[in-house]
Amino acid sequence: MTFLEKTTNITDFIPHRYENILLDCITKDPQTPLKGTLDLKITENDPLNRHLFYKISETNQKVLITPFYMEIIALAAIAIYNNQDKNKTAIFASISNFEFFKSVNLGDSISGEVEHISSKKGFIKCGGTLKSNGKDLCSGVLSAFFVDINQKAPETKPTEIEFPQSPPISYNKTSRNKETAMIICDALLEHTNTSFISSYTYNKSHPLTKGHFPNNPIMMGVMQWLSVEDSLCHYLETTKQSGNNTYTCNVIIYNQKKIKIADIKNTTLESWINQPNILNQTTILKTGKINFRNMIKPNDTLYIVASDITKL
Image 1: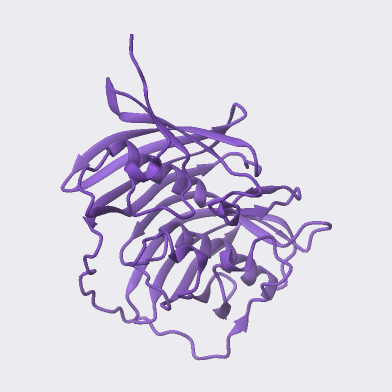
Image 2: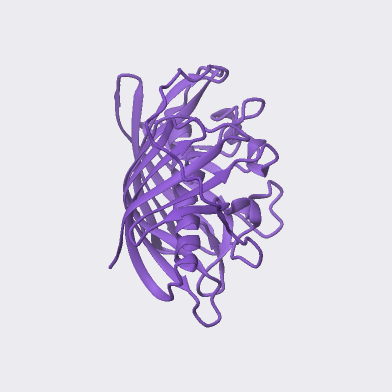
């Protein structure tokens, strides 16, 4: 008879994360140690303030913000890998083959499966799926590597990109479908029929700096990904688009030093702009590949450069 190992003290596996952690329980079979199941349930009065990760959907339900589905899978991947060096933490290098199937409401239980796929040259690769009420929510693959928690990022040469000098078009963040802190776009700097450049400054007082990581805060990779949703919404409003539509685009993110932060390729998003009884919004449906190349620290500014915007 096999006895499963069930752990609710997630900080045993992830010692450098304790606030806003999107994982309640991980269960492993000792006979297949690099595979596990996860559980998570968040309610309105969540003691870890995790309701931050929810938004008002097009159906006026409180649902999980799409990129944070992969954060759940990522945390479970760290837990099943069971890194024994408490001075090291996982930095995520990429997300691939992400596909969103269904929203999950605040208060609903989330379960899932995560499996280690391979290890190569210090990188681990894992795949996972999430479910709720017997329905598939999403699937995706990620890779990560472990670094010393206090290790400084290597110096990277800036690119040749030039940022627009024209007056920014500020994003009005009032009366939105998310809390203001979770809107990862401040202004639109430039736009054409098929492209835009937007900006966002990661304030040092942002509520997610406390747990990612304590005493050495960096911006969550999934928040960089989230900037695509919010920037596209601002772009569609600015260009006076309307309707329930689907778009595809590619995005490169830079910081204020012109250093490339992330490549986000082949993203599909659905939008609801100026629709009756629906707050303006976009949501990610698919992303082919994200490569996270450098870190964002508090008070850094992101420049989100979108190209190949196509309405399907």
